[in-house]
Image (cartoon, rainbow, N blue to C red; front, side, top):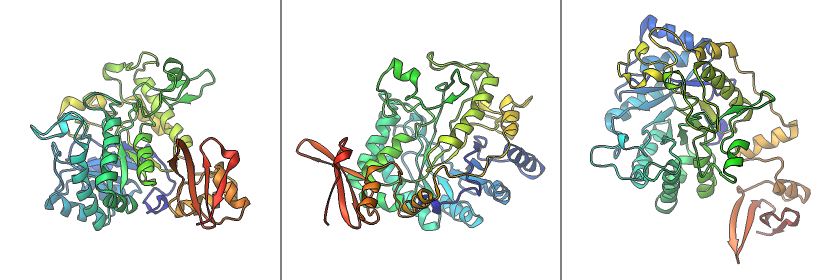
Length: 430
């Protein structure tokens, strides 16, 4: 499948929200009130939980009728190690019949709390998780749904819970032990779920422009030159870690949805995780959430489909676990400033391509072939100049006698150049 083949809102809005942390949901007039709140905030995506027996069906029906796309996590307490049972598969089939397409079957397997007693091991056992995930992914695809590659808690390179080494080990395992199966699921509906948590890694510069590109922003680079997303994924662009690894191992690009994360509500009304960046209060949370949605609208990659920040409500939506009370936008006694701030944003404008017509058409044509198009790339320009036809492969690298070459196949020739020496592109026949 290509990006264009996945179900998306008509205006391609990326604005979403995480429903409560409960598998049980409002109904009747209460549900109608919540749906109207979603519409007032112009939400186009909602992540919610199902108990495995269809507890989300009535909410999904209502969301779909209002043009809102549900993302359903089939909830299993401590799901690792393990995979879907027949009850859960039956529920997924029923949800697909209603029009639901996006499903999560696992959650943050790099944390001990997501493992059965006695099963956790430092590092999160990505080989075990991937074996079970492939089994679930195939089943969901066979039913007509889109299965999510498991979202991780962003833990950077933590010695036990690190998300970056977990991703690296997971994609290495898929490449070495299940390459054919992995290619099959990623080509036929699998997508990547992430939990892009911003923390306070954002700021507004002297010109009033918001920056969310941590760790590539000037503050981080001045303090830690050369730091990349492969060093620290606690960022709005933390999703680039699995995206990069999928491209390196399989030459593919699939949709990405942040099904939790966003700008977290500050516990106690004030938080500053990283002292290099400004802390914020409830009003700052509202300002940053609006800026985040606007930044994603204007800067996110085509494959980044949606951001669903944690969390719309807890007790007010009937969830009695107080663990998430301070994460909620809607409290029992009030609504945080973020609610009115997001409502004031209005709807996202219809997308307008920044490219000229010819480049827009080329971009669409390349994407239909499952290839990423870069109008500034040297290889397409060389191919057009020399009448070498259309691309057959994505760009890839090979090592030869201590040098690294970038290569791409076109219908008329194989194009290559030593990396960095783009003035000396060459071609050879097939």
